[in-house]
Length: 421
Image (cartoon, rainbow, N blue to C red):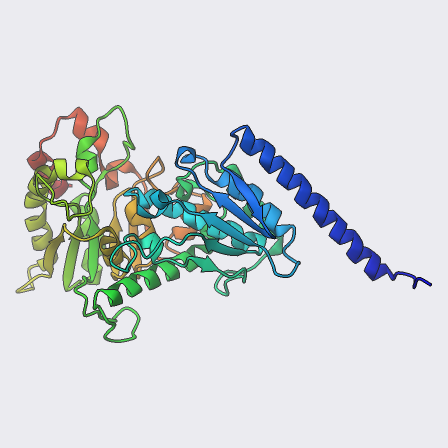
């Protein structure tokens, strides 16, 4: 004879049927959409879901991730639990557009956490050369558990809204999106700093003490770091590019440097030479304008040194230029500083989350964080959260590309403008 089925058993059977139907429908929808080219490919691998990020889908990569994460979440109560696997092609790990790829990485991590599923890069982004990852994407976690991070308050009522908001923001420049990744900004800051510390140790930069703001590294770092984005700015013209990008005036630099009274200030920039050695990791357009960038700094740095020395000091801080760092080395300097000051730049935004304090200048636009008042991205990165400041008003905080090109300013004129404003 057959034993009568309990209500609980019947409900469990119904749940399994629903999961199977959802798996089938999502797989069918994914295959159909991928065939039509609506979003990058994703597929099941057992219970896991694999998302491929092809180069030609640079501007809308999370479409597939949103579908795939939902498919994996439908079976998250099964054993073993499914994982969101990112099929990371080599260009994702090695491209010099690393600043634009990091927000995609954090968006995919956020999707996995919001759905309560694991995360994995396959293959990983390292090691690539000399047994160490070439870019910071290889020093960040290549896999992560589905466990909710303890530093983030969990409100089940907002999770679906976070997922929907993330998936509606269809751009790889996801730092401009206001849902998903900002919720976990404290986690990303912790992980970025840990990645920079691992790089520092690999470069013989062993931690000398375990303090917070006073910890020192034998790897030669600076108390404060300024990211001097220059080469590609000089390359752009007034009709294209992120015209809100530009140079940070001296008054803004001193506004944040003086309270810190740093012992050393590092200028992180691209090579200040006309022709770059093949050994240097940099873009051709950055080297092309190396001499012009050098001429701008030649005017700006003496004024910076003088502004930090003050009338009562015999000697000011050591101000030095770092123009030959590797990409991950430059990002590590930004992440491990007590204070990092960024122009509008994805290259600087993410490592600045790891710094004790970061300053993000500029407003909105293509390569700038979403800083408009009231936006959640601004709230996540504002003074109340990670001590990252947003300077509103491009006239006050940035000498823009547009103004430089329209006035046909020479490097010396650019430097003089920065000194006087």
